[in-house]
Structure formats: C-alpha cells, structure tokens
Amino acid sequence: MRNATMPTRTRPIDAVDALAPTNVRWRIFLLMLMLIAINYVDRASISVAMPAISKEFNIGLTTQGFILSSFFITYALMQIPGGMLADRFKPRIVIALATLGWGFFQAVAAVSFSAWVLVLTRLGLGASEAPIYPAGGKLNAIWMTSNERARGATLLDGGAPLGAAFGSLIIAGLIGEFGSWRVSFIVAGVGTMLCGLLAWWYIRDNPAEHPSINKAEADFIAKAHAHEDSLAPASSGVSAIAYFRHLSVWCMCLGWMFFNAVWYGLLTWMPNYLSAVHGLDITQLGGSLFAMFLSGFVGELVGGQLADRWRVRGGNPNVIFRTVFGVAAAVATLSIFAVAYVHEPIYVVLLLSSTLFFLRWCGMYWAIPGILASRARSGFLGGCMNFAGNIAGITVPVIVGFIVQATGSYFIALMFFAFAGVALFVCSTAIDYSRKLPV
Image 1 (cartoon, rainbow, N blue to C red):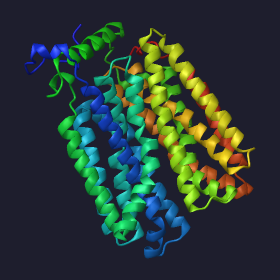
Image 2 (image 1 turned 135 degrees about the vertical axis):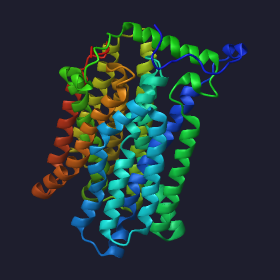
Image 3 (image 1 turned 30 degrees about the vertical axis):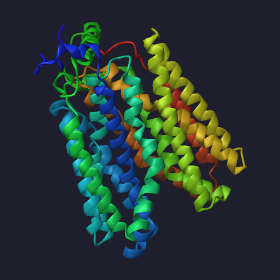
C-alpha cells in the first residue's frame, strides 16, 4: 500500500547514498526543540520585564495579572484551528508563519504606549504561537516511525522546560545589557523571526522532498509508514469530530489538561511559593528554578529514550505507554505531595526537581495524536489536546491564587496539584495505544 503522505520521489538520489542513511528527521526535531524553547523564552519575557513595565505605565496588580493571562486566551482558542491549518496546509508553512508571527508581536510590543496596547500584542502573540505544537505533532507523524515517536515527541515538547530554564536568564540579561525592556523585546522578536526563516528553509512536509535526505533514510521512513498504514482501519470519510466517540480521545485531552494543571501551576506559582514559604532570596531562587526546570528537560529526554528503546525491543505499545506514563504520574504525585510536609528548602527543591523530572515524561503525549489518528488528521487531534491543556493554563493560576488567598497557605494548593497528578495517572492508563481509531 502506498503511503498517502509519501508520493513518488521527485528528485534522483545517488544509489551510493543508500550505504549511509542520513539523519534528517532528527535534525528537524532538534530544530523544533529550539523553536519551542524560543516559544517559552518569548512567553517568559513579559514576566521578567513586568516590574519595569508596571512602573513605566503605573499599573496595579490586577492589570498586571490580566496582561500576564491575556496570552492564554487566544493561545487556547486557536489550538484547534491551528491543528486544522496544519492538516490543510501541512506543517512547514504553518510552523514558519507561526514563528514569524509571534516574533513580530514580540518585537512590536516594544512600541506599546499603554498597558492595553501591550495586551493587544499579547493576544497576537498567543494566537501566533498556538499552531506550533499541533503542527509539530503532525510533523512527528510524518517524519518519525512508530518506534521513534516518543523521542520525537519529547524533543518537540522538551523545549518547554528548556525555555523555562533559560528564558528568565536570557531576557533578564538582555534587559541588563541594554538597560531597556523595549530593546530586549525587539532583539528577542527579531531573533525569533530569523528562526522562522530557518524553519521554512529546512523543514519539509514530505521526507522524499528534503534536499538533504538520502535514499536509505527516505525508504526507511516510507516502509515503516506503509507497514503502519497496512494495519490501520480504512477511513470512513466522516468528520474528524467522530474521534470523540472514543474514550481514548477524551482521556488524551483530559490527561493533557491534568498534566498542564501541574505544569502551569508550578510554572506560575513556584517562584512565589519558594520565596514566601521558604525564604529564598533572588539569587537562590534563580539558581533553584534553573535546576528544577533543567531537571524537567533531562527527564523529558530520558522518558522518550526509555519508551522508544522498549518499543524497538518488541514491547507492546499499551504496556510501554501505560507503564511509562503511570510511573511518571505516580512519582510526580508522590513528590509534590511530600513537598507539603517538608520544611528544609534544599529538600523542597530536590522534591520539586523530582516532580518535574518525572512529570515531563508526559511530553510523550505529543506522540498520541499520531498513534490514534491518521497522518491526515493528527494535526486536528493535536489541536484538540492542546486546547484542553490550555484550559488549565487559563484557570489553574487563578484557582491556585484564590486557594492561597482564601486559606493563607500553600498546603491546599499542593494537594490540588497532587489530585491533578492522580487524575493524570488514571487518564494515561485508560488510553488504548495499540491501534489507530476507526474513523
């Protein structure tokens, strides 16, 4: 059976190339790792610059909070349309235009003359960044084989903790170097747009069309996809909404939402928690946050390697993913639960590092749309999944803030994170990873 996304090769390839397979697919995903890291650097810029911005515009905490949260409104709303765009127009152009777009809004924010103009640029940033993950998930389905998608997913999603680890350092360094948050935004935005041009130059929607791939690698991908397609049910031609007849799709979306409840909760409130409860000063806080987010990045890569090596050795997909996700959720939950009962700062940091190390194994969720759906519709499912995840991005920071304000303590907030970890365990172990859904 010919793979629908693998048309006849459009250029000749020297037969000698077959002796030495290239690794273009891995270079593409290292590029995606960089783009997602930049994505998080640009997101973090507003938080780092907020003290200077609030002083210049004379705005209070409520307005600051709205500026910080406005990004997630358009980011969440554009997830499903972004996935549909990736299915319709293919990921290359969507990724390139998204990167150019969010770089533009990052740079143009520098000329904001009021808080509300800044909000408009944040809304534009959210809408522009939205398609990058669904398009990346579709790219995973196009370029990676079934034995490589866990590593592809963790390279794609690993940019989140990597960008969180370095983002504050980079933006703070730019502000310190130029003495202006406006100049730092311009530098970050222009750098992002240059990366968008790089993405357009290097990424391709069809492995056979890439100028750097050789016959061995192209044939390896094509044969793996042909075998995968031969095992998939025939498409009925019905609407993609029919995927939601299946429990696995609901569990995928809810599982990603509960994952993001913990991730965004820690991302937004962990600095305040460590400072207010454990007395970390700005130097200690910066070092601790860097170590914790870097642990998350390392954990993400370890999880992807573990799952794919197990798969290569003949492991059953359900056993592999349910075990890996189950262990990740269980250990992350126990670690965040223990934080509530530990008072020594060094042990708190170690437990939070453990939480992020195992929690970020769930970056492999970005392999699930390609597992459950055909390559033609994996962008749509990825958009649905990330829409659900970013509902948590919008609501959880507000929920945690309300809990802390109402109780005067972070204990209930930590129990909330632990509950989300348990729900992540339940959803992740209920998904059927063994077959594509008959839609």
